[in-house]
Length: 292
Image (cartoon, rainbow, N blue to C red):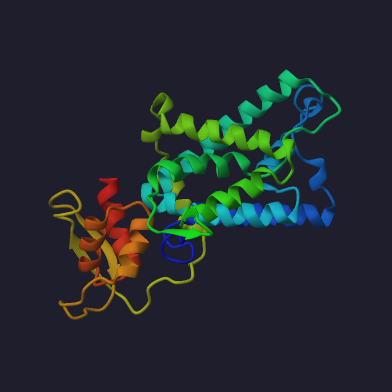
């Protein structure tokens, strides 16, 4: 199952987070410090270290965990494309903070000064993302293996289970806390789903993130009136491919790619027709419609 167009197109926040997580993990592996991360009763209540708390959000404790974790973070970039970078940044901060609070509460209840209970890494964000993945991403393909039923979403769930059980109790706890955080976000606690940062902050990530591979090239810029998919009279400057024959019909693969991102089939087909069968442009058109 794919998460739409390849690369980090229209997902600068995800790209920044994935790169930061990989850099912190590799750096701590070189320094021999990942095993020292993870929340413990002593770190929280006796001798708190802010740097350790921050690093524990980004750095995985082992290479296998990093591989599965970064794969899932990369796949879940589909949500940033759906709701936009601004709201996705809110989702990240909400998931990380709320899951950390749940972890601190769990550590306080257990009161074991000798144990590092939750393992380090962005478990809160990853498992919070499984909530919208379950509810909002439709199944596009079903198949059978030895009379067992599977779908294109099964591989993502298998990767999540592998990550959840990677450190047994130490990884299960932050995973559950992440699912709780994602559930609270979906329930729109305190109206969080409508919250936004100033556009300056969201645009900062676009500036910080270098160009992604797979960006459309040789395109011409034009002003497009979003009469059907956005408010009337509002003009948005976008990059579109060179004109193609008007009779070009969207391919089934292109439609399936957009459907896998959560868009309905009819809207996906209309956007592809308007974008002349260019998936990246069609994704932008659909995201504009969702954001208005």
